[in-house]
Amino acid sequence: MLKKLADRFGQSLLKRRRRFQKIFPFLKHFHPAYIFGFILLFIMTMRFVIFPSFVLLERYVRTSIEEALGYTLVPYSVEVAFVVLVVATIFTARKKIRRHLKAQPIKGETMQAMIYETYGEPEVFHATLLKKPKQGRDELLVKIVATAVTTGDINMRGFVYVPHGLKWIARVMLGFKRPKKELIGHVFSGVVEAVGAGVKAFKVGDEVFGMESSGTGTYAHYKTIAHDKPVVLKPATVTHEEAASVLFGAMTALHFFQKAKLSAGQSVLINGASGSVGSAAVQIAKAWGMYVTAVCSTSHIDGVRNLGADEVIDYTQTDIHQEGKTYDVVLNTVVAQGDFDSFHTLLKPKGTYIAIAGGLKDMLRPLWGVLRGQKIVAGPSAETKELLEQIASMLIEGSLVPVVDPQVFPLEALAQAHRHAQSKARRGTVVVRVA
Ligand SMILES: NC(=O)c1ccc[n+]([C@@H]2O[C@H](COP(=O)([O-])OP(=O)(O)OC[C@H]3O[C@@H](n4cnc5c(N)ncnc54)[C@H](OP(=O)(O)O)[C@@H]3O)[C@@H](O)[C@H]2O)c1
Image (cartoon, rainbow, N blue to C red; front, side, top):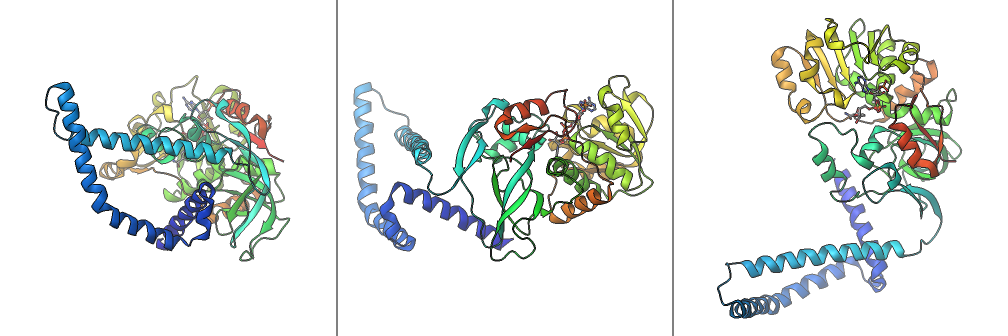
């Protein structure tokens, strides 16, 4: 953990150093320790000059303003104005540095990518050239063949399906005014183009698939990923499109099934059964020997039944809350359908509520569930190599069948792909063909 934090801190320092060196190329000739020492010495020497000068300047500004206005200023108003001025200057400088860096020509090999610089509708995506990534010692470089539109990407782009109470937290994490990360995309399936010296489990030419929310995005032609992250050999039984489509939903569903410790023989109600997570959940539940009641709209009934659901409820015709049935497990993937409060009447006395689309309230009250004798499972999903290996095995044995929307989009049409994924016309996970 500490090593990981130190690594991350080191990498971010290196990135900043490279940026500064781009603006002030002469800094390359000095070791960072010398530069740091020089800055420290400069501050120590100058504080005797800077601070008294600042006090004198502040007194001068204050008396000049007071004389001009004819009344005494509120205490600390000059200091506050000064701090505001400094902060505004720093922000303007940051913007200018960013613009300056973007205008620089890219040195070395480039790759096509779709990025976004502002939150909003799907049309915020635009094509650009980025530096082609280079694999580190423990990484592989993957030439991406297919990626997909996940609700994770839609949320990062426009906060469309962010559960209640989490929007502001998401904004703080992703970038308050504008996205910190311009290249997104969670899932990929592709071919290994190069491997670092420390990688033994993969070789050039291997077909792999994987998922990484925190790494470099997949809406691009290439991606690097550490070999111990969620990346495994793609089963030959599925195409790149199918592999990319199944990852997000299956990883989420499997994580929550294991976290909730579900078991064979239990009855489960899956609300939102035609979605990426829902369609994987139906199949995993059947593979685990559970009795599945799936909820979806009219046009998806046949599809969900084909996935193995024992009963299918059309939510446009039937209100599940009026059915009078209760279940061992209720799994909700629909943000708009509310939280535990809306579903607890559908649970048996010792039932489990899985809040896949659960908001802050669901995350904060597992204890309340325990007091009622029921269990609430919420929180963010994990993505691990172990889960991915299980998904690969299920794909090979055929207990997990990818549900791909018939309309596959090229990477340049990413905006249309996002728009289609958000529409009612969607018939499965929307796949984006990269190469
Ligand atoms: N906790 C986590 O870490 C985590 C991880 C992944 C996803 N999520 C969240 O889980 C949610 C679902 O993700 P997803 O990728 O599966 O989304 P999705 O593919 O868009 O599926 C959502 C499904 O909800 C169904 N739906 C809409 N209104 C409904 C209603 N009134 N009653 C029943 N079903 C309804 C839709 O079915 P019809 O088309 O049939 O209407 C749709 O298929 C998202 O909010 C996402 O943010 C959370």
